[in-house]
Image (cartoon, rainbow, N blue to C red; front, top):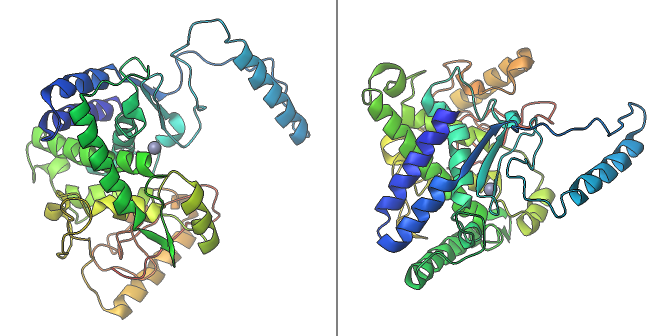
Length: 380
Ligand SMILES: [Zn+2]
C-alpha cells in the first residue's frame, strides 16, 4: 500500500510538471503542497481510548446516547490545545477514505484495504485500478475547487497566480457543465457544481493511477514482461485496470433514490463516476475494446468503451452461468469475482456490466447487500 501511494505521488508530481496551462510559479507551490501531504494508512499511530464509553449489548438507544456524549466531551477537551495532526476522522474498520484540507492529509482506513479495492494477491493493474484510483482521488481533492483554496499547511491562502487561478476556474466550469449533462434517471441530471469537487478528484485519480501503473510496468520490464506487463486471465494490464476500476463503482439503486442522490450527494452516481471520465482517458485507447465517438464536452472526448459483440443467446447463457456460480460460492461474492472463471472475458452477459462499462462483467459490491449487486446499463 505504501508503494502504491508513493507511485501515485510520483505520477502526480509528473502530471503537475507537464500541465501545459499552469505557470512555473504556481507549479512550484503545487509541488510543495503535494510533497507536504501526510499519508495515513490503516490505523492511527495513537489509538483512541474508549475505556470510558459504556457499551451494552441490550441497549441500542442508550449506546447511541452515551456515544454522543462521549464524542462531545472528547471534542470539547480539545479546546485550547494544539491540533493533533495524528487524529483520524474515520475508524480503522471503515470502508472509505478521505482528504482533509486543513491538515493536508490523505487517509485510508484498514477497512478499505480489501477487495474490490485492494488485494495483495492481485497484480498491480488490479490494485491501481481499485485502491490506486482512490488514492489518486484523495490526493486530487487537495487541488479541486475547494481543496485548492488551502495551502500546504492547511491554511486558507491563495497560492495561485491570478492568471492560473482564472485558467483553473475556466477548466472546472467546463467539468461542471459536462457533468450537468449526465442523466441518472429520465429527466434527472446530475448537478455539475454540487459534484464538482468529487468529479475533479475522480478525473485526477484515474488519470494519475493509470500513469502510475504504466510507470510501474515500465520499471518491471515493459509490457509483455511477465507478471507486471503481460496478459493475465486473457486481459492486458490496461484492461485489468479498467475492469477493476469499474467494479469498484458497480452499484444498484432504485430510480427514486437515484433522483434524491442527484440533488443531494456531492458524489456523482457510480455509473457516471466510471463512465463520466472513463471516456476521456486517452490511455484506454490502447487497452480496451472500443469504438470511436465524436468529440463533445470538455476538450477531447475519447471513445466510449464498448464490449465486443456476442450473440444474445451466448450472452444470456453466460449471465446465467455466472449467477449460478455466485449462488454456489457465496463466500466469493465480495471479492473481485471477475477472476473466478475465465469464461466471462469478452463475451458479455446482459445484466452484467462494469459499473458503466456497458457489457462488462460487474460483480462486486455492497457488504450490506445480501446478494451481489448487479447493476446493468442496457446499451453501449
Ligand atoms: Zn472524494
